[in-house]
Image (cartoon, rainbow, N blue to C red; front, side, top):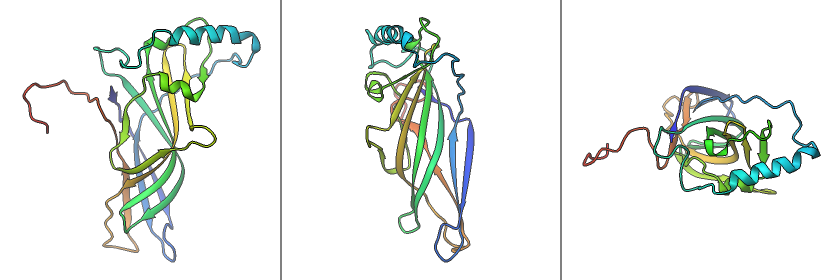
Length: 210
């Protein structure tokens, strides 16, 4: 799997500290994947038997242990982050806490279908039965996926095998702040995203890790 980091989005927040002004800038790296919506209504009761048969076929024999195109090209994973709130900024602990909607999209040909021209939004528990990217936040201190009233995650399948996977996450991430100009300082905090298990470089035997 190869995580593609192709754009930078910067969010600047002002007046973060009581009794004085400050500026804190958050940089997020992501790619956009735009998916067209089907004109047909998935909620049409006449579609339900065909939808059920399609999902049953896709899940039958699916091996969660293998990534898409196993042994072939890396999996391109697109990402999108929507910030719901910036909950806390701590100069003492050199970190910040935010709540976000974190979406990833990739193509898994094993999940392509042609029986019905609809995007299928499935129960969040289906995510436990599908391969999903092992992305993590490199500068994370503590994170969790919200779970009220159910785990806040979403799985949507597209006919070409594109999978959209969304999570609502609160994370506390490290940010090395330069406070020499406090309280007129301006900070640039990043959220660094990597794959835990995969990278884009081939394995080199007897080569020390960088």
